Image (tube, rainbow, N blue to C red):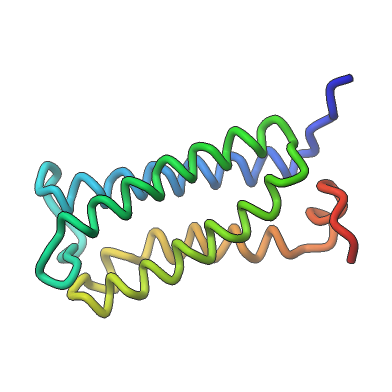
Length: 130
């Protein structure tokens, strides 16, 4: 029997796709394939490690979006974890020579995801107790 997907879960899946697109853009910028328009994107003078980590985050965001689209119970937990990890990694990138302006889209998307995931209605949709 197919589980019904609430509107909030659909919004979270769309935000996860936006997070994946954001991580892909950072990956390509750290590999110097895409130019940087907003601010400098770097990772402690060695952007290859930064590109690998952002690439890893890209695939995780896509996996989480798929889990949310199919309304897996673990999707909520993974969404909270990956949004937290993306926020922490964006802060580390700012410490490692990236500009705040360049990392702002990831701060916004991850912050919105965390806020929305921690709302009581979203928790209920995934069966998480209050």
